[in-house]
Length: 460
Ligand code: GDP
Image (tube, rainbow, N blue to C red; front, side):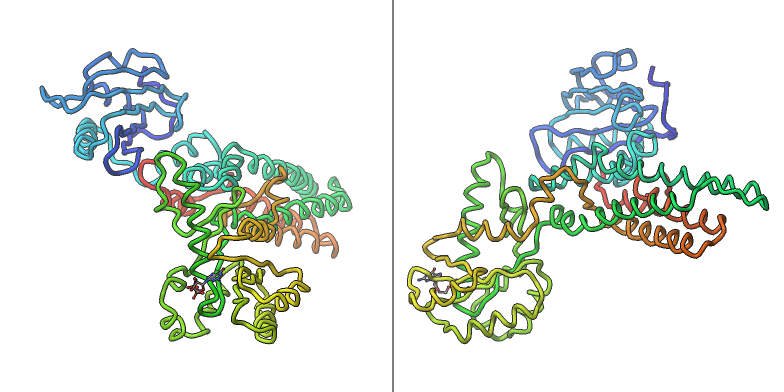
């Protein structure tokens, strides 16, 4: 049974599929034509060459007489597996020693160590899914907020790919009509109505430009919004940061078994991650900050997509505050002016500042009005877009390809406008098709694939 292969690869790869380090269990994954026979050769239990696909078998892994571990073997027969090849997943105890022994053992029987992303690459090359979906596998694994998870899931399940394929099909239709004209040479026939073509290209451009625009949001969803807390020394920056993070920590530690280490200095508001940058700067003593000067604060503000700017309502006066607001406006970045220390603020100043409805007033130390602040923060991200079913581009490579597609479509339009001959039009349409095809992998090359999959970890 194991001999039956749907794959274009004749070697069998192996890697640890679960994270490195000690765990209750670990999974070692084998994929390739010999996956089942190699697993069978080290397994004492049922004869795996005779079992059905999608079955699990208890037994031991042995080297000679020595029992290395008690394991469960999950068997998937090609093409009904992730890679469309024969796959065996060995669930063993999560000791690095046992894992090493098992991997060495199966390598001794003819498997080879997998390269980074090789399982997903095989799944792609064997036709399990297209390139955009393969890339989304990595995004699903690394997503750490609701919005990132949703976008990655929809891409992995093919939502984005479907949109791109539909666009391509319409263009292919026109390209072939024009190429048909070329076959007729001098006869001056026009199968592809130029007016219809221009309309189609314009329609496509609207859709593609929407996708291009969505990348701003997609990038935010995937990577979090880089946010900076700024303001003069003693305005309350570190108090606010701690208050926001403390709440977040309490929420996160409610979820059993989670640690905050991986998402340090990040808060999650309704599924969107806001990542505080340069928090080390905030935690440094005021002396150090002053020594480093305003320069650095400004460069950090430029890196951020959102600035939370704190004013000290107790010690600042209206003239200084207005000057600072002016400077912030000149930066041209979204910012939220925050009046801190409302618990001790002079009413006159607050009344004056309230005339500017961008202002929000809080007390960081008393943890007052932090929910209102969070609402304001969330307003900065266009949530309408996230909630809609529109496709959102989250991948920088796709974004680049869409830009190039849009450029090629412009060339088509210019060509139609200046009545160029069909062969030139066909060339530009083919160019647009090429760049659209790069996204889903209809058009690909070894360098591109190597580049994409080398960013995956080994075992994925
Ligand atoms: P930073 O230099 O901007 O990081 O400011 P800190 O967070 O260190 O705060 C400076 C001082 O202001 C500390 O003594 C805080 O306790 C105090 N402070 C911060 N927030 C508030 C607030 O909302 N109300 C009052 N009354 N004091 C505050």
